[in-house]
Image (cartoon, rainbow, N blue to C red; front, side):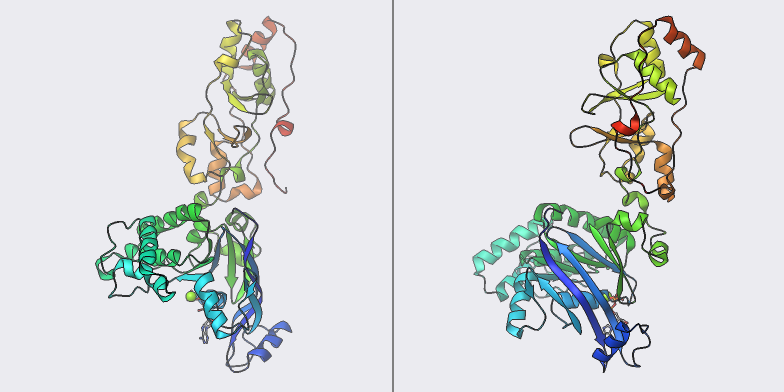
Length: 440
Ligand SMILES: Nc1ncnc2c1ncn2[C@@H]1O[C@H](COP(=O)(O)OP(=O)(O)OP(=O)(O)O)[C@@H](O)[C@H]1O
Ligand SMILES: [Mg+2]
């Protein structure tokens, strides 16, 4: 998300199908359940309100019949809401003339459909340029623009082929290129990847995210697939029986479901692809700030009952780590400083997905160090915490035991008392590293 500009705003949207929609809304507002609003009335969308920012992928997720398609059809002006309003960049879609509405739809909103909806007798190039032709863009210009987006979705060289010569994934890329070429403020995608094979589908999701990072579009993406929602959504609105029951980031929905329904829903989600290092990291068990030598490191590790100590500079920038064995051997050699003797600590960034931490975690003896863009230590991810988080235990706050000391206490005591330097207190981990936010 790159700005706070609100591109699309829905306020109190209702859509009731049937003979008495207004009366049905009154009943709902009076507290009537959805199935007690008159025999032939269906409340497809009930009181939906949300805002979508420029550059955001806003996912609407819910089971079949929960009202997703009805909602999206109100957002692109195809259906007039029974109540409530839709604004796109300050233009209200509701209650405007047919001509104005058509204009808004052409310039402000484009759609990508589940069934691709390509014109069979037109080439890829002409399919992508079609909307521009309708808008009477001169031929040379629209061809140029179509080529640009065809290339962007990875279909260079396929411009002259016809839809039936393309695989499903490629056809959907054409659909996407066509929608992007329209250069509208909002891109609506209704189950756009649902007809694709799982592997192709994953590829398309990745491509969408990649394109998004370049194009900074405002995308509303409908899906009933939770993993897809979690993977591509900046925020997700969960719908149930016509109502939006929760809006939040994938992480919020997973770690703080608004109700039992959402919590049941997210039970089987692939957490490794949703949760990031920042959601599970902890303060390091032992942390030391330079200047300081092996003696100080050893004392801190003794105090914290652990065999490894992360080392930072005055600005909390991570310099490396030292184990109790290493510190002991440095101390015995009479080394005064740790600076040139630190081992490298495996690093990751706060927004790295847990799925990407497995291999580094297995390869590293130490917990993974989580550093920000300036190299400052934010926290660490011990292997057990990584595993526990995937089982859904991070809500309860798994506390990793520090890695037990490798050295017998007496060995450390002897080494420390052999040469009596000034005693140094360990740096308090809590005050040096921001602890993970947790409400317990
Ligand atoms: N034109 C219509 N006339 C009457 N009822 C409709 C109409 N369109 C949708 N509905 C009803 O509104 C409710 C919501 O339907 P909608 O198509 O929006 O759900 P959805 O979440 O998109 O489902 P799916 O995942 O199956 O596409 C359903 O009960 C549906 O039967
Ligand atoms: Mg639908």
